[in-house]
Length: 295
Image (cartoon, rainbow, N blue to C red; front, side):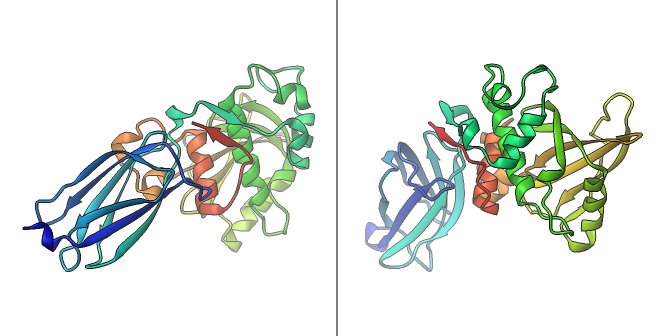
């Protein structure tokens, strides 16, 4: 088919989860779904609007579009090219955790009041015993993944309102252990009861707890997760006498693959990464954990 039949034009805006141009270079591949036409463009400037011309338009305008930026995960989407004029496409890209050079975290004084209070109360965090407040937050071994996890989960807890009108975060009293994808904390019994009661308000639903191991001496006391399609907050409770502990995590439920339409073979091992949770919270739930990336 001659080029005279290719009058379609595609105009691409490549942005991050905050809506800013991603910058850097990007490779673009279009595969026509019927005809033999697969133009490829390498090293395009992603800081500007990208224009691709000489494409087939409707009624034969269906392409599979693949975009692979330098510092973000590659995305593929179907696009139908109009017969004439520009077809505009805005694509949101999640960060590639492997390409993050550094993370811009807020200082301790700039954290939300409730999070500062929680850190001030947490003086027996596993492997950080004796440190609390700013000393804990600024400890050299308090690495970026733990810090990102802490900010992700507490931001989500502060945005999750129970049936009594209060949010989850004030019920978290003291952090026991902080990992890269979850943390264990002393909580009140009231949090467990209000979480259970919030099922009728469609805030939480019961969830399996088979993968959650109780601390020594504690028994399982139920698990619930929010009804979000992506980025569910899960609270798994354990009890010993009057002591209550919660295993708190955010499950992305394959959100990176489906929410952003990321090429799944490119994300092995990255979908539970706290940086991936950061992207889901901002893009899907308008919850900003308060930190950003340098790539």
